[in-house]
Length: 429
Ligand code: UD1
Image 1 (cartoon, rainbow, N blue to C red):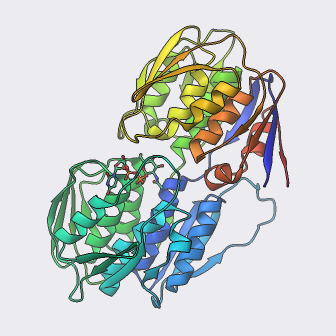
Image 2 (image 1 turned 90 degrees about the horizontal axis):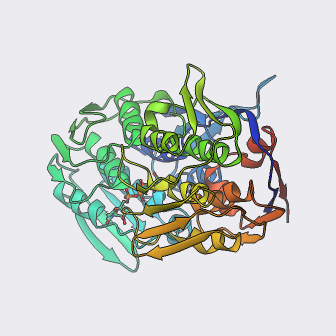
């Protein structure tokens, strides 16, 4: 398996292009199941999760085409893909495919909405807590689906189609919001989703669905109202920039010092994390080109955070921020409220010399003068990148094993960082 080798100590200076958002791309690709016409997605990142989803959709009968390389094209520019679900030939999403990526469970919504049935394996994905699917089931049941569980599969049936319904999420869930939103587009009548997730990726999906002919109001709010249509049609949509990738590199620059332009990064999608970085002493400037991040000479101040649904501090940046705080001038408290088991990076950061104590849902981080390079093991996507951030300032060599996780969600990470002066390379197995 590939590894990443980092020699810490270099400041980052230059420009990092921000890719299309993984967490928007996945539901957008799944939305292709809702129409027999072609959905064209632009600014799609080259990621393992995207390739995996192509495979899963292909199993349902979705044709996939990708525009070839163009003369003079930056290898870091997003790609354009075409997805056509002319005929859905299989409504089963099997265990061996779904277990590799939790988001593939979301096909259950469009499949049952368009075909009247779906048999989808319970999901796998990052090992960060139990991540149940009760809200998906409750919501689809509210829309008239008959749901049963059989040998690890969720079976959803609605032979006469889904019916519009009012459903209030008892807890905010990004995936369940995506899924019910897609399903409601083909339901008979009006669906009202209360306490829906407001993450920008939900808005991106809704905007694409509207281009496909859906009638959705309340985009960007916690109440989505969807008037179902008989069918949707093809459309072209450009994926919004990845706020988690932007936030990750912002923290990398905050960690090493230097000045980097996060090209195409959108500060409005990342306000709470950027405000936190400002509190930590980092200079953030929003420009037409993107987000400029700089730290020159000032010490890092400790800042307490608590993860929250959007617009709060994102759980997907918690591990990276913890890495940053290991070098702060004092003690910070980092509280995780979204997932109950998202501290697997703590042990690995400790291998690099970090001082972190766990206290229930919180981690108490006492900044240290020096981190020291070591071999570390990534256990999930965001945890792995927190180890890269720590490695960028650790004294000596850090080897991040199981790079597989990084490739799921960060496009050409080593290339983007080395272009800005980091000593980082991939060692192929
Ligand atoms: C998505 C993101 C992930 C991010 C997370 C929270 C993608 C591909 N993944 O994951 O990167 O960390 O949002 O912002 O977009 N829950 C239930 N029952 C359910 C569904 C969820 O209890 O039926 C719980 C989960 O266990 C978790 C919380 O709700 O504690 C939030 O999870 P959710 O928002 O659904 O996360 P994902 O959509 O899986």
